[in-house]
Length: 337
Image (cartoon, rainbow, N blue to C red; front, side):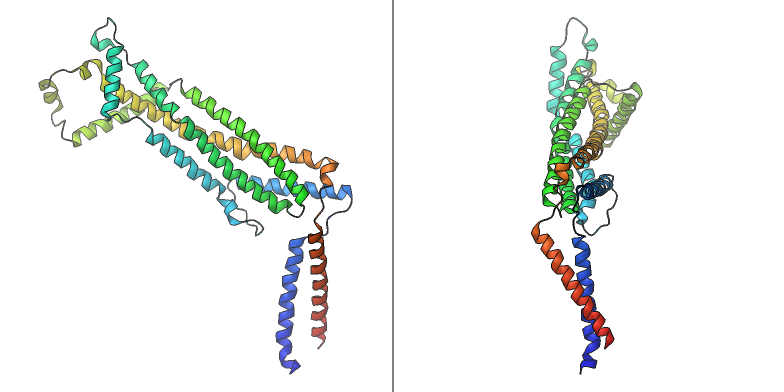
């Protein structure tokens, strides 16, 4: 009877031994006793934490079962946020087909007239003013884009810290304090840089060739739309037959086309530069600042003294070791039968 049950018994002990061995591996070795050993361990943990954080920030896949798989989504999540900002930039662009916008610009052109002939009225200042209104509407979406990426990043870094330093809760809390200090610094610096860039966009500037290229694109688009609507079958004849209007003389349509073209140029810049600012501040400078603070943290003896585990953890390790030894002994005895 015993001989028949022996193979199954051996298999059960072997499986239990494997599970217990894995538990011991997860629990790790006994914590160091001396200050020197504690400092060395703290340096190793901090180095591992920074290495993993750098990998996550650059979009690398961290294949480590200790960490939840969602930490690998940080970069793709950031890209989704950047795409949302792009959609905001597009949605807030002035609609040159909007009769209200056209009417407002027409009234501004008339109101700005001095003694010049009607076809000499300046329109750049009015286009510039409207372009600045568009840029100002993007300040809040740009800052919101940063806040979303920064919050997600901080949440991921906290998860990494809990996994890397979780065996030593007091030391882990110190690390979290460093993370939150870095978060506040990054918040202030990045918000300031974004606001500064938005202010710079109020200069309303573009290289001539960049602006001309976009203007030609918008004009071709307009001609195509007009043709599709059946309004320019014979442009020259239609132009001669219709009466000359204020729009022809003072060029409000050209002003609208200029506004649309410039806003496209500015939006393209914003949709590239704002995400680049966020990536530089959050994914690079934040990590470097955090790394410097953590290295300073482990150099202070009062902090390395925090490298001690709770009594529950020590008890669990002792019990697991004892169970492992018993199982190992049982396996050896069974092999003798």
